[in-house]
Amino acid sequence: MFTLPPLPFAEGALAPVISANTLGFHYGKHHKAYVDNLNNLVKGTEFESATLESIIKATAGKPDKAGMFNNAAQVWNHTFYWNCLKSGGGGKPSGKIADMIDSDLGGYDKFKADFAQTCITQFGSGWGWLVAEGGTLKLVKTPNAETPLTKGQTALLTIDVWEHAYYLDYQNRRPDHVNAVIDKLLNWDFAAQNLAKA
Image (cartoon, rainbow, N blue to C red; front, side, top):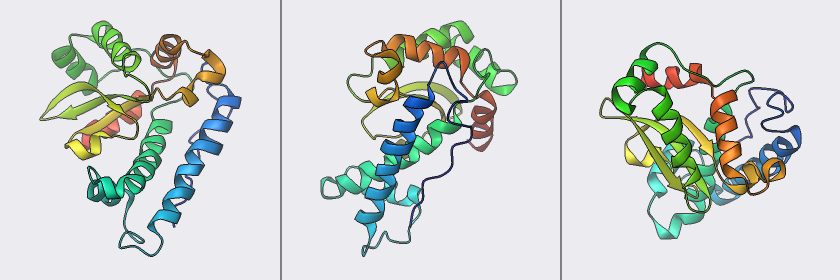
């Protein structure tokens, strides 16, 4: 059975960028529903004792397994997303990831503008990602539950741009939400850990 992992911070820790009210719904209702749905879908199947990652990779692109893929990928995406955030985060990173942002993405200021644009221009629901692929950093966006896991990319950071991620706090102002997350919440320590595994 999959379980809802605990948040790496208190529900009010990301306010005012992300309110406790938004987290209560986003984590406590949406993320929990994906976990519950996945447990129901894998019951009695060959995936009953499989890992989340193996379910995602085995069901990606298979229309008859779309429900299982969507719920498994959303459990993974959300668990990853919470770790991308921290109180007092954001700003310029340091170390290897900073060097790679300079060499691969044109420097921090260009990265920040391009990452925001990647997130803001994801049509409908989805995600903006900073990934490592083939030894370089890239910015990508995925619709709905899609994830870099299925594309051979290593996810470093993500921002959730499904409306439930920001609507209670920002209504339709997705750009304001995205820029506030980049400036104040991104967890560069987590990104560096992911880069070290790439």
